[in-house]
Amino acid sequence: MKMSQLVGRRIKEVPKDAKTRSHQFLIRGGYIRPVSAGIYSILPLGKRVIDKIERIIREEMNSIDGQEILMPVVLPAELWQESGRYDSVGAELLRFRDRNDKPMLLAMTHEECVTALVRTEVTSYKQLPVMLYQLQTKYRDEARPRAGLIRTREFTMKDAYSFHVDQQDLEAYYKRAHAAYERIFRRIGLNNVLSIESNSGMMGGKISHEFMAVCDCGEDTIFASPDRSYRANREIAVAAWKFDREPALPLEKVPTPHSKTIEEVAELLHVGKEKTAKAVFYQDLRDGTLIFALVRGDFEVNETKLANLLGVPEFKFADDDVIRGAGAVPGFAGPVGIDGKKVRIVLDRSVAESSNLVTGANEEGFHFVNFNADRDLAGSEYTVGDIVCVRAGDPCPKTGEPLEMMRGIEVGNIFQLGTKYSADMNCNYLDRDGKSRPMVMGCYGIGVGRAMASVIEYSSDDYGPIWPMSIAPYQVEICALDPQKPGVRDAAEKLYGELLALGVETLFDDRGEKAGSMFSDADLAGIPLRLVISPKTLADAQAEYKRRGEKESRRIALAGAAETVAGDVADAMKQYR
Image 1 (cartoon, rainbow, N blue to C red):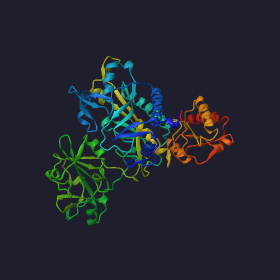
Image 2 (image 1 turned 120 degrees about the vertical axis):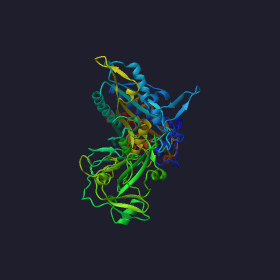
Image 3 (image 1 turned 90 degrees about the vertical axis):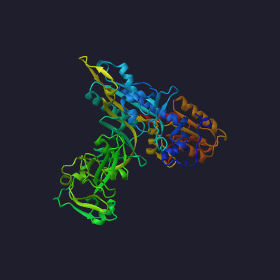
Image 4 (image 1 turned 60 degrees about the vertical axis):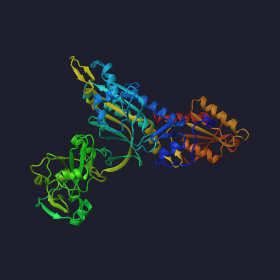
């Protein structure tokens, strides 16, 4: 491809709304263009990168017996009503009615659709296991799209779905899929991806893993042990906390005027925050039930853990009137005297297993000291569980070493769904005895555009992307300096033809721009190898040869240059196979 014909101009200025490096370079380099918030057109350079990522994904999915299909983006609401997700998923699912007033939706994921498909095509254990996958457009009506392709509304995803006779068969296949994902990310140049335990969320199922590209701009928080034997998303991460028990002292109500926050109460009573209990109130959005969560004052409530413990899909913070209606006083709330039959009281282990804590007395200007849950809530109904966020430095549950906290971009996920969808949607098979059983399912997703952006976050410098050879839009770029000077254009054209004849993907900057502008554009293109032909190099029958990201260049003879470069490309590609 000649640069003079390439659609997608380079931009010198950093877009004002682009905060991450990948967003900036994808816009500046002419890879993508915004259409609306979270919606982008992909330009030729970007499409070439995406096509290569998709090719690698297809190869690895085919290697684990995947069969490619294509399902529609627009789906009838009745499929999601069968699974129960039509009403449980929030506003991120875009719902609408067609001209016949039939409720429809734009698919953000395809579990329902593929389950409905398989129940018509697979009927016997003899046909199982089977895995179907697609590369398809999805739409998620994000409230706050951000960071370019990292969090969008419309995106391309590889989603795969496997169907099995039992859990054991699923678990065996799950390992194969996990290994395939590791190969995919290695082959596209993401060597900083961690597989971590995660929360299944709206997808359902009990076991799931996220593949996180570690980078500072990531929106997810990861905790890992120093040896990486333990890795988990903040949503489900646990720690080996130990809570000291002391002899219980008498419960006493003390005045705490004008002291509502944990910090104010701790300072007033001359105790550490770890000797206090923090009250947080929520309401179940299904029926309005009040949820009273109590954690030690030096911890924060982990709302995902709380939701999983109670089986509550969605809740909100309770307002003060609701809290007062339950007999608690905002700012001075505590569990003593609260009716556990009317309010769902949840104590974190940090409260249940500690002694002599400070907690609210449900009276304006007063707190209790020496609260002990087992004694002071005797006869009350409450639940105990782990509902707090892990912190950097907390002890690892496997090694006991301090946990490290990192940021990451979720580039893929895999789930053991079990029979969540097949049971509700009657996706059954006949076993050896002719008995009908629900299929056991798994699902496996990769965000293609997000993966491309993540590569830039991992592999770039101040000037632009440094593309791995496996997914670079072109493998080599030829820069012709002063092409109007005798022989320069002819030499560059000749080299361009030789490289193409050898199958080397080549971008030829034939525009005759000044050197600074040409090299700036080349950095934004991020092509792995660069050849510069100028009157100076031509005088010696040579070209300047440089690898993207390296400061030093070298001279090579024009005669045989194409063969030299083709050999370097072939060698570089070996590490991505």
